[in-house]
Length: 495
Ligand code: CS2
Image (cartoon, rainbow, N blue to C red; front, top):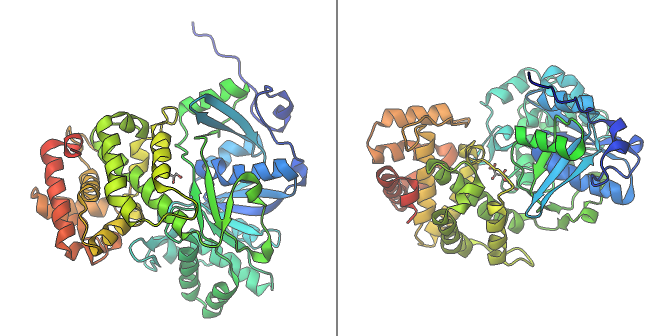
């Protein structure tokens, strides 16, 4: 006979006083919080990054900077968090073990598809000062190679059909800004926190283009009045697992359906341009306000995210489940060092006060952290949206300088192998990417000839533009690497 475990109490406001002493919890007055920040794309990353910076500011000086989350697709975050009145456990996994805290600044979660008008109203409300976003690369409905809005995108078309019940993130922002302008209200600040190049400027262009599809005056107002600070965000936050749920239970003695597990490191560099200068003093929590975020963002997108994608495709093909497992394989750790040193660092100007070699040393240690189980499959997702800013910018700069790209080409070849959908042992790969079906179709149509398959994959201008497929130094290097991958497998191809 199996004996049921005694049920633990669900995490909620009443549990705060009952948590074990080691668990940090809000030290400010939760009742004083106002819905001043709305975050679109509430997921593990934001709850382990921006929300924790805000939590630290509240703990340091109190205040009313509460956060309302919004999910643009699914109700699961709301369903997990609502019974806990927004409280959740953040668990830090460092080399010395785990440390947990309970976070209190989340006021609620709106689920956009259930009631789009409610989200537009929340955004348009004068109490909303900042709208931050982590909707992932594909959530911007743009063309990753050019950074322009795709008016033919299904979600953008849906926005235009029902402007007061939009579907896309740009659609919600435009609908709310239109309403604020009509009401004579000041704009909110749009704070993009996704891993996109010049993310603030990119989003400003997308909103202008989106608004101009209906009303040039709104587009002009957005361009003139709305601040879109650029940001660089960094913290490794793997997707939630059953083990995390169990760990939250063990640490807190409470049932938490929505814990987040993250590494100790975090970084946030923010351009200091906010509507009415209204923002939490995130510097109190270690964020950096900078006049120019571009050098930080370049460093991070190329050295961290570029390396992540490299390890994800090559590591997955070699049968490694996580980034930590991949780094524990000396062939991969060595390849990564060489990729950084030989091909990435030479084209990268260091941000003020930063030693890039030390930065890559620290990255290698972060990637190797065995307590962070970050799956290669998770990072391999949405490669069509990630390759341009992570790897192809470096490729273009090296080619322009007449420099070779053997390792970068191998990563692109590994991506082609990955999106082909069949792994090295003949098993199916669960490829998640907005272009997955189109890529698979193009590769299948190309047949078995490696050069034809590479040509087919590189023939996606949304990813590679029109310049790279026409550049023999690029296509030859990728084709060579792809042949080596087919002949010897990913691990041997690293040599
Ligand atoms: C990762 C990022 O999933 C991915 O593509 O490269 O989520 C990465 O972990 C973060 O950007 C780290 O700051």
